[in-house]
Amino acid sequence: MTSVPARSELSRLVAPDAFWWATGIEDTFITEPWPSTGRILDEYELTGHYERWREDLDLVASLGVKTVRYGVPWHRIEPERGRWDWRFCDEALGRLLDLGVDPIVDLVHYGLPRWLDGAYLDPAYPERVSEYAARLAERFQGRILWYTPLNEPRITAWYCGRLGWWPPFRRGWPGFIAVMIALAKGIVRTCQALQAVDPQIVPVHVDATDLYETQDPALADEVELRQEIVFLALDLVSGRVGREHRLRAWLLENGARESDLDWFEENAIDLPFIGMNLYPMFTHKRLRREAGGRLRIRQPYASGDLVARLGRLYHARYGAPLFVSETASLGSVAKRQRWMDDSLASVRVLRSEGVPLVGYTWWPMFDMVAWAYRQGSREPAEYFIRMGLWDLDPVTLERTATPLADSYRSYVKGGISAVGPLSAIADASGERLHVS
Image (cartoon, rainbow, N blue to C red; front, side, top):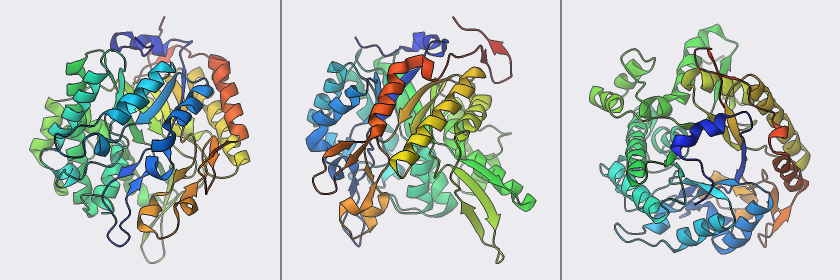
């Protein structure tokens, strides 16, 4: 039995001395080739992780972390409908457990097996994804208790349904909403299936956070709409999109059905943990209107207090324990180090205010390949994004430690002293809750 806290022990993770440190390996899987290039986007393949997984997992353990966000490739586990190949999954997850590192298993990270006709809009998707989740949970019953049903549902719906770059290649807000409703039903069914296997399993809901602002009063309604969309996936699966919800009329105007929204209220699930994915170069959004009337969204590089601002926002809305499930800065080692220091200082501020932020994840552990690779023509190394604790050699893919690895290792070794104890917790109404 590993040290993963069971559902009945969640209060332990919001105790004053509770905090977990984590890392992760970028695991985007887009299995549909881009028409003009024939390329797919499998980060494990492009970074050599399928061949170097033992070495990479040893690097995870070398940081001293006891938790890792780790994705498994459904498209390889079930390459054809009903044909299962668990070798990579069994070996990699088994190795993490042997190393004393508890995985938060990323079940779906954007991409799906190609045999799903219409991807998320395949009518059988909720049943197929929940079956896959249950089979995996059965293999590791009693040993792995943390699962992320689907990483970043809003970004998934954006690329699959709004931009049309990923299957099922829908465009516009109706496409976004259709994909969002489908994948959210899959999240609900996955959580139900996981806990049917083992009621002690804790679903960890992870989404991309955005903070929208404007200096133009005429754009206030647009900012409010965009900010509400940030919360849409969590609101749907937890049954919050009732008759008075800010987005309900907008959803219905863009193709959602009353029966869909009612279904989520009838099948609402808990949000035991919420993971916030945030990046200083992507997460802060400022809206303005150009002279010609076009809406423009800028992404200014954020200061470290971004973590505190978002943490307060999510806690006020959901009152659930939070953790930073992805963060890193793009750029030089010095720039990455500044973000690590500043973001962790912001974590300390939140905890001193009683906001139950109970974990921090530096992601990715080493370079990832930019998503533009799938649509591009250059060599993979030319798409490397320097965000990790280790850099990749562009030719050999050797992992080269930067000073950041030692810096993060020191933070991890410092434990609770790096982020401070959690003060008496304030619930969403402002009442102070004391935990033992």
